Image (cartoon, rainbow, N blue to C red; front, side, top):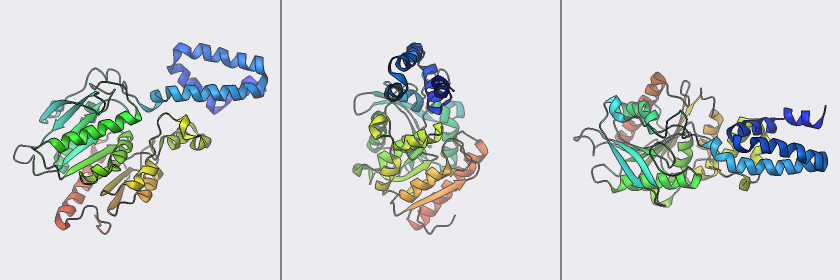
Length: 337
């Protein structure tokens, strides 16, 4: 079998092919360069040069794999409003730490309850916009009975800028700063909820010393241990876990950062999630050093919304909050719900 045929059948090349389809402007040039390298330098030299070129392309095009703000189509143009579910809300714009304008929805409980209930900072996943999470917000709003701030990261929905790891961390800080400045809510009961990519952002937020007293509790749903771990899983190449970290533009090293999380933390692991394996949630739970932590393993919850299963999940979260108010200790390990 020729070198080119072996090359074409390898998993890394199939991965590159997928990226090339996204990056059509230079895909033809890249393919031509592969053949020229082999012709000019031979198999071994071409292999190393190809590896060098591949890592460069992956580094600079990694954002397109991690962040999907335009999926589904028109997600940067149209953001469904909470009013379609009869939720009272404010559409708010704030500036992140570097001046980037961010869009948010603040969904509040009735005036007589707004200061008596917790307020939840909702950090969404890697695709779409906050409007695509409104069904989740409805469940949290009615079942847990909390106020909800739905933050839209930079480069998503109606927010300005382009997404990046440090940028998303900065945006989450701006969100909790905003909640802490409001006088119409109970700032002693701020919940940070992160799903999928949002879970990685939430973990980073909870590691900040200034937030240890501001975050009432942390809820993580179906989030991953790190980008290198996810890359190895998705592409079936375990070697990707061991590449030097400087080769990754986005790292999201939650498996290391979660060791610094000391706030009460609830881990929600959807056993039916086909993207983030449950073992990653188990690893995060085991590495979390919070003295008050619990993990819920729910058979039907996935990374996609399912009304019946998410309602059951919301009910179980509510039962934890009710226990907390009875004994004044959130998610204590000896609670059996």
